[in-house]
Length: 111
Image (cartoon, rainbow, N blue to C red; front, side):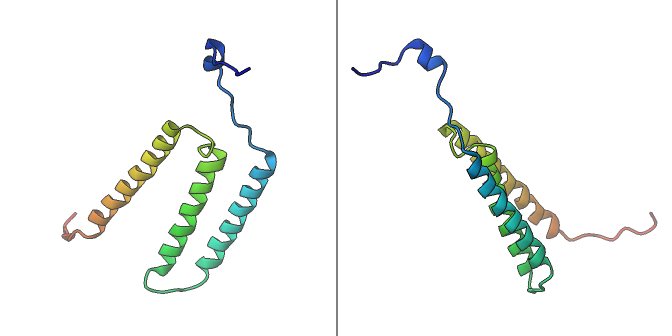
């Protein structure tokens, strides 16, 4: 006999339970990535490559935190959409930084 969806089932959906082992593994990855960030800061790669490496590691850490600790990985499509919108907004904010850096600044004297 098949289980039919009743009103009480719809009102109380089941929740995904993540095993503590997963959190410990992600935590170890975050510690490893932090050590990699610190190690990369001591290496002079030149040409802005240090910033690229640091930002790449930071994005990986942010994705791990969002997916596992904020439980987006087991979330609904709506949860995924809002998480994606957050990252898109971050890209827009970094895009405005390009405008700020490329302006011709006029020196004002007498202030």
